[in-house]
Length: 424
Image (cartoon, rainbow, N blue to C red; front, side):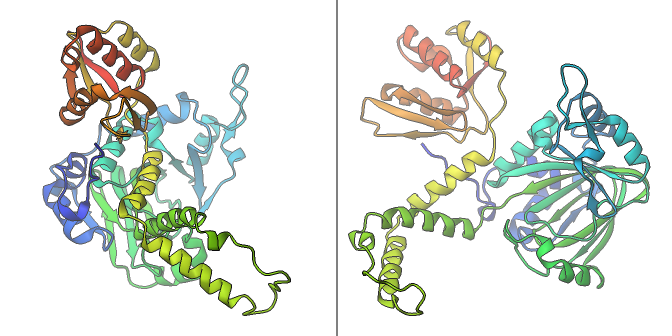
């Protein structure tokens, strides 16, 4: 019951979030040509005129920084290419809310007036329209997605030329911003290879003729693979753009998974568990060459003998932890479970990454997902398959016995696997 993840290189699902961002032609171009290789610019007119007004606006930014009680690291401030210390834009919240790292709208007012850029981090956790878009994009691509927003005063630049260690989709939502893009000095950087490790090379490349020099206007979308050097400057008035960061799974992740599982398997090898000789001198090069060779060969055997399914299981666990499922309201969810009837319709909670573990002919299986794990009678597998395949089911259809159907429905709701979509 483990679904195959979407594969951008093989066509995959309908990808509604990606089509909204790039249009049908742009989606095809990303999948077949640009993915991980080269930038892709999609002007608003080529995307059907969508300005993302429902996703993020300046009014939404004002609400987030003044009324939502944001704390660091959900906001940071940059000026002249550097990030300001938290104390420069945070303060306590007064009696009953004295936590000192809360965003201060008064300090932000002065900093923004002086040319600082406001960076809203983790918007996929704090602003529902962005959460929906990021979750949909992650499902379309099969790679985790985060969201940040950058709000810049007129004629200012928040960050100097740099590269990211993840792909980005830039959505211009307000004002005009000039983007300058240069080819990488270190293609496809990994998470532990930030641009600051190659600061001089990045600066030198940024002084060369640009690969792309363009002005993004509201509704324009720019895709940049990781490693591509870029900088942006506001033109004329206040500008805001939303960046959807795509944290690609790579073959390096597969290599990590191989080593993790091989390391665990190697512990079962008696020859590897044997002690090194008495008096082994670890300071003499080559003193233990034979032992090193034996350990190397054992590790290579463990890597070669690992089934691909075991490797993917490791990566699937990391993917499960990298994103969250569709939000649920705990109080309303429990009330729905208590009031459930056979005529109600349940829907499978979105973005669950649900697996069923254990032998199907056994008495019980384990339902594992981003919502947690719980045991379930294997007799309920047909109902769970129906819910998974169709995305929803009437409670009364979950089992022949009305009492069993109701109890199963309540179990699925209480464990966060299903939500009530329609009341009977």
